[in-house]
Length: 129
Image (tube, rainbow, N blue to C red; front, side):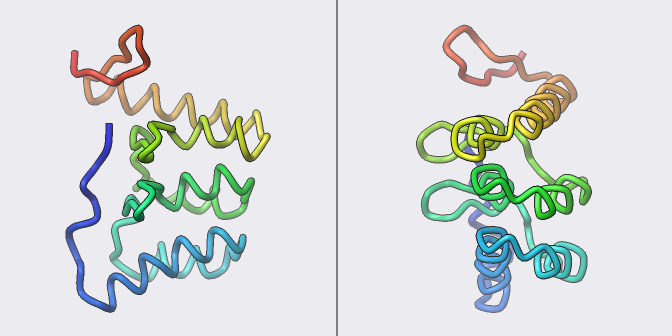
């Protein structure tokens, strides 16, 4: 499941904040992530050219402080997948090597999917119930 969250708030200033959020996560700069999430109205589920969100990067880069801020915001879409079909939880396991974060994100994915009436079929694709 991908999201066309590239749209919505596409002014140059908003685009700059979206890039700044992802760059801050990549740099593990929790204070900048906190400011951007709390003080701006950007869509934190924005997907870059690779289809990755700030949450994907936080999971892949094992940036726990940034991940805490993103998850704590209550705004994350845990069901988004990048262009290679990977969820944030998969990146936590594969690249971040953080199994606790991977399990947390898997739980968040399951909760969101259940709330939205979405189930995973045998192939790993998300389908509506």
